[in-house]
Image (cartoon, rainbow, N blue to C red; front, top):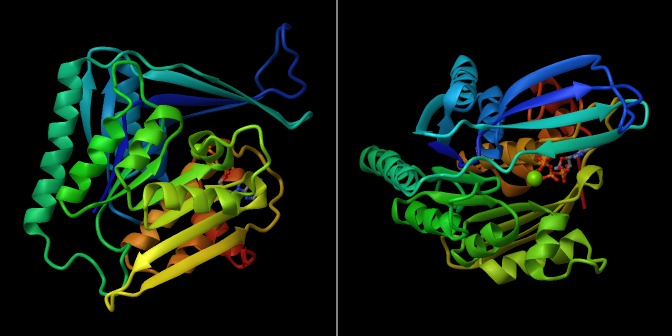
Length: 333
Ligand SMILES: Nc1ncnc2c1ncn2[C@@H]1O[C@H](COP(=O)(O)OP(=O)(O)OP(=O)(O)O)[C@@H](O)[C@H]1O
Ligand SMILES: [Mg+2]
């Protein structure tokens, strides 16, 4: 079972504005809107890849209703807690002339303490129900197989920075792996709870490790994150350069199996928008890990998903045919 958590759901709009000039009146050439928030993004890509996925988190108002309907139409099962406040909007403006990407992100409306409690209870209920009916969900000798709670994205006001850490503990108590993609305080706290999988970009990793401002390569950052958190797999992505992965997996015979590699995507063209490539990457990774797939093979699929997302206008949207084609060009070093 795969459950995504979007505490800061958003209705994401992407505009193509050729030759954008800041401070002037600009006209939109093309526009697309999709349900967003990192958890919802991951859910959408998982569904596109053919997985059954439950999208949970918060949604509110008319935008919340559009997010809910949009996910359900794709075949994603939704289990949102409805908030008194309206879900936010995030805007990406893509200028194909300068190739500049400008993002304008609302922080999200405050979450009330009762709403927060209801979400914890809902997630506990969903995981508990699954755990009660599940027998032998993991694949022997595949320590990262089994059900996942996917924690991704920023925390809106009213959600304490330790929220993801709490959910990581809750996931573990229900036999779920937790995977974390966050930044700042939410990431730092979350790391201390030892999620099974950590996947962040190089900027987020450097900030969490206190190495911002220095040039540190993604592999060293992934090593640092794995050592600091004790997670089974730490992945640090670096845009079109690729991603570094460091793993320390306990095998059934008690010996750890060690992973340390860099995965490079093929060059893609035309790059339309890379917003959500990290979310697409996470979906490809977690989907395959959950089934017991070899970690390197899962990382290759993840890399192809991140690259496939670059070919589409809206965040975290992929075509399965692109993933299959691009996967052939992924290189592991
Ligand atoms: N231009 C690109 N060409 C090919 N692959 C790409 C490109 N950009 C990203 N990718 C793939 O997607 C992965 C994730 O991208 P990136 O590091 O930009 O994530 P991110 O910063 O978390 O993005 P977001 O938070 O918007 O989802 C990269 O490791 C890479 O494999
Ligand atoms: Mg990201």
